[in-house]
Image (tube, rainbow, N blue to C red; front, side, top):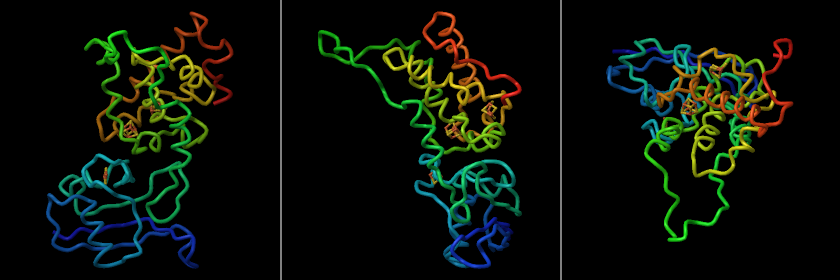
Length: 253
Ligand code: SF4
Ligand code: F3S
Ligand code: FES
């Protein structure tokens, strides 16, 4: 089959191309089992070498090729032509500055990621026998889902609350915070909950639910956000979280 691509392009360094515009390409003799990323490579290698996009693993692991495919956030390497049809529209993800064509500046996204301290914190001495810190199977299951995140930004860049206010820490950062907050071996959870109780933290989430279906890893993103909200409310009740932190007023949203 022949597949027609309509691609949102932008090159800030070339006069005439330094405003977003659409360009069409046709890829001939594609198979239904071809992945969108493979056909994008064919465009780049056979038709226009200036077409710019990120990719690395090509197997849904690195999270670098998130983009809007026919209007929804997906990884190009996981989308088959069988699922898109023979007309494919590609745009950069929304809410992050576009650098060139389908490449966005991920730094604001990673700044939010760093703000939740996405690393294990435990300064207590190891058990006397020198073995690792043990954890029950039940406790491990509490954060199993959120360990699967590949930081692709499909969730955060599909969230209208994030589009409206880029200061919102966003679902991906909350998922990363959840992974450590619910780890019984971690001792940094109070600081993380304090940070996520900030007015630009979890309370910016209005349960719009765009994030969960956008996640290529099938993570229950909205549920994880809800669990962090509950943990903050419990922390406030118990006097662990600052009293000033809490749901933002509707007028402040
Ligand atoms: Fe991507 Fe899912 Fe992680 Fe969001 S939660 S960054 S959509 S893997
Ligand atoms: Fe946004 Fe997901 Fe909440 S789409 S508002 S983070 S449920
Ligand atoms: Fe790595 Fe698609 S190229 S996830």
